[in-house]
Length: 372
Image 1 (cartoon, rainbow, N blue to C red):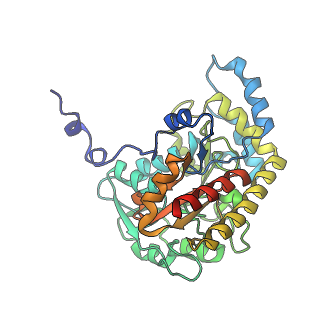
Image 2: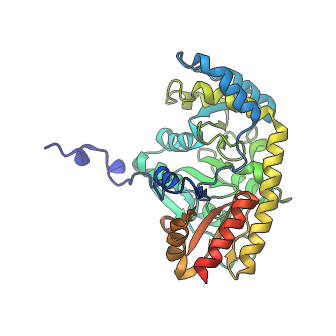
């Protein structure tokens, strides 16, 4: 017998495989007639742009050949859209791939990676897989006046030490939905040593309407150690195609290109993302629908006596106390999937994706049943 566990690197041995929460394919079959309400993965319930669908159909005749290994057309479209040079862009098989690769390239055994206690789970996985040590900075307290459990930038700064190679932040953050302002972030960034790489994950940036929020993208030209990642999985509703990108200094991008897998973004993804980026009307409609339902659903949950964290994303973090596991299981048995938060140390909470008005109404009605 071969002990493959022993053959693996130490960082890999301590990893756990991704847990999707539920076998969604099996649940879809089980609730085929009643239709499963999937509110656990922060997907866009309004669907992809018609232009993206048309681009996919047009690209089908070419799926027997490899996609553009440079992703040139999409890079040029992104460069024009965000006002950056194509040399500052790195494409990924979703932003998840890029978040993992930054640790692979810039951290390793003996190094430290800093992230917030309630930051996106991938940051800890990236550090662990690279063999680096994660330094989890304390988050803001549960009863913080503005951003409960949100990023505490002074605490993150204090966690940075001589061995720190990477700092991961999400703005807005998953799973808390919280955000931080532009001025405080730039002060944080300016206080760091230039050799510490700061990765700001802006997967949910398109959903934000808070006046005190600003993307970190304009800062990339002034801070060579800053990286901003985005995705087409959320607001652009292309989660099934896995397209993401990073914006950073051209020198950093050149280093990252050495580990980027050839053809890491498939042909349909490249075509759909470029078309979706151009369909500003569809994006605006999705964002507006999300904003309206985020407000309505949050108000409805609070009216039921539940504590709902502030959110600038397409989900809400909701406290159910000791009943969270029971309620989550009861909802699944009735065809409604939410996301348990035990893996984040938030076992009393469930994360609820903002659905359509009909989906949210069904959630609330079923919630009333199981909480009665």
